[in-house]
Image (cartoon, rainbow, N blue to C red; front, side, top):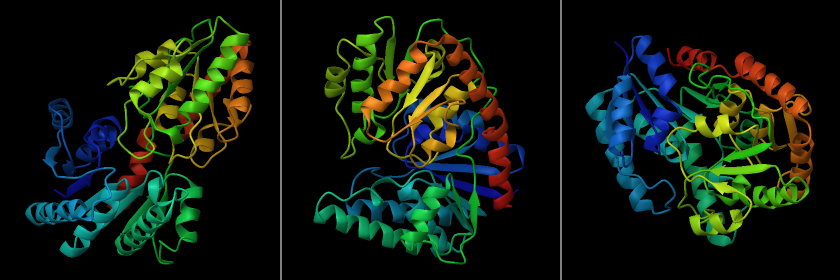
Length: 368
């Protein structure tokens, strides 16, 4: 029985984002082990219920301390030496780097999944951040050079990696349609009659939360019957917006529901999904909304644009343009038939392009 170790930087994501992959790997005859920092009892029980074995490793997702990262690397090396896995699959930047280096030291084939570019490619704010980005890119280059395969979720990220000189010319690349969406779990739901706009995202400036709040205020003034909902957890990263500030942004216009373990009730409540993010790998929340039959308004940005055919299942708007976002929202606020037809097209795209089974088959095929 082949043994695989999946390394994540957020325990919650192993069930929420990789649960179908874990199930498919187990069904394909793999023994599945997973690692992440800070498992809550619920996270652990959900992953173990899938059939995977859980290993908790120390890692700061957003911290820049080299000693903490080296501690994570040493813990990863010990875990790999103990398990002797046949395959290692990493996703997000720190597991991609340190998990790949641990695999290289142990002589184990590794694969990495680029689910977004993160701080290593953000516009630097000062010399210190520029230095940190240089180090991160250099480590990425060192880590990925021996990867068996690197999975990308959109061609823009691949182009940026090549432009930065991170990928060797010989690197094996596999393009996948995001993480996919479980069409059984996220089934279509009838649209509400009234215009209800929903955004689901971590509380980060780069997710477009401020633009969403500004656009909602404009739409509310023109269409008082419209409603607006924001769902998402706080984030300790440098771009994080505090819960208090988010509540202030939402005051009088947006209902902030906080963080939800299950976002399906929020999507079912809404008639339009909005994600004005500055950049994504392929946004999972948009795929979930599409699978439930919602039109999507998102940005014409890497990753985001992969989910919308402009004018067919939603609208693409420029990044950081609250005015354009408001105009797109108004088009759907006044036209229930357009919401219905675009929602039906979203469901069709989710079924034909983003079925998680198709995505997982491609991943497992590369790992074999």
